[in-house]
Image (cartoon, rainbow, N blue to C red):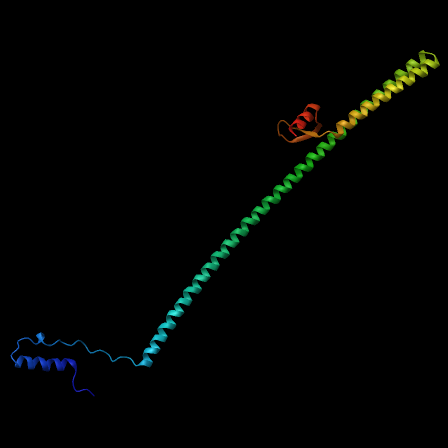
Length: 208
């Protein structure tokens, strides 16, 4: 148990200084401050350091976990947004494909219908020409001798066959030619296809 303290020692030396004839003890002695707590023992110091380290490490772990959670949340939001945009793009692409497919089917159907009608019209014209030629041949045959009638009929048949061959060639050429879509002047939608003309074919040949 201590019998004195720094302040009491200061008071003692201050009184001695005054008794020695010095007016101000402050010229020789310094007033002590409040008493300092005794230093911690090594065990206490190590425990404080350990607790401080654990606290700092826990805080760093908490901050790291929070940052990780925020980063994962942001990544998930961006992923969902990207998937939504991709799905919307896929839907728009599918709709466009469907629309183009339906338009193509309609154009092909109209072109085929026009081609069939064109072929049918030419066939009817050929049949009419054949009947007319037959009637003409019969009229001529009834007015000339049998031998001349036979020769004339053969000549007419040869001419008829030639015309038939030319008509078939023209028909085959018309069918084999590329088609040009004829569009409605108001809606600009294809109505039917017509055979490409010689001039159009020549123009394509020059471009190639």
